[in-house]
Image 1 (spheres, one colour):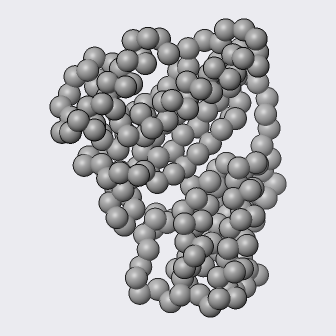
Image 2 (cartoon, helix red, strand yellow):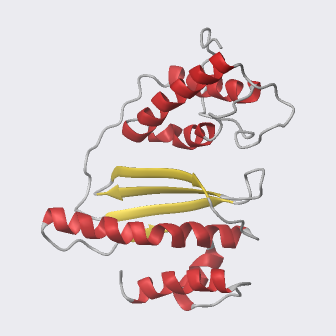
Length: 216
């Protein structure tokens, strides 16, 4: 598997990033090992300096046990993006007082098994300090459910992160601000409205609602 003569790309991945064809030719054992090695390096890079590639990296990491020619093409595309953006650097420069700001989003039913995908970014004083991109563990029946799962799954982590920042600063830090772009979810978790189809989703709704009312 060669990674020479890469074409510069303007995005880490294409729209078909999460699609996997059953007809694609499996890589040889030698190529699989090289694929695995490269993905380990890219995972380290995405966690430390290039959070903008984390979604593509996380998906391709799920393919390391049985990569195919299709996955190799996606990896070459990602490397082409890194080639194009190799001079971009990550600068950590606080621009405001200590404040925890969080963006949580979900992409509905984007995986072949119908599961959705969650993305979360945490800022402290305007500086990106944490990024994650991961496949949801349950199947949501609608975009609203996918967004609710993303929000409730990460709520506890946001609260712990806020407590940690308060501890190391030895002072009280303002209530974390979470941005959510789904108006149905906002209504459900702020007033308890909406209709949840299962106890599972209803408990998630009230978990967020409780944290909001407790000013957590």
